[in-house]
Length: 155
Image (tube, rainbow, N blue to C red; front, side, top):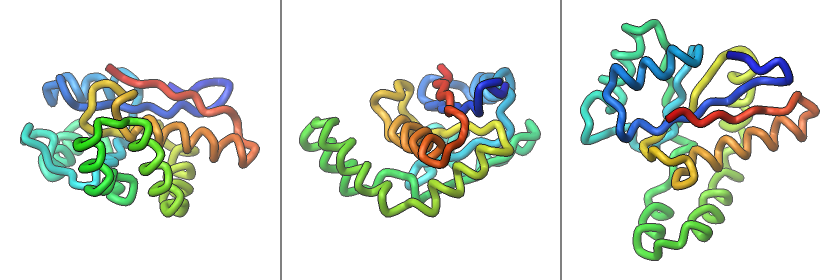
């Protein structure tokens, strides 16, 4: 589902999905590559731990890529849990992303030739670092003179 005015970046949180509904959402939106941006790709929902998830995706002819570098470091997650201050979290995570420019550029390059979707746990993207990554990718696209990046959050 490419946007005629520019590429589309999809995001999804797996909370609330069964694995079949999750894969269905990816397929309905023409996703080719799921990019897992959890620091630790493990889940209490066994289908969403990296090994099982990548197997389910491969069976559905979808690709999986884990980019640990874009995961939120434990100390930043811990500070959010202790303080509940999401603005401080966004600021801290934004500083972390400044150290991950090569990974962000790699992701931006992948976006040029793939319908891809960023994945994390949180159902609501406004409570998740994947929104911050998506917004940073839009900034990279704009600063490079590329077409406007459309961001779509799958529910």
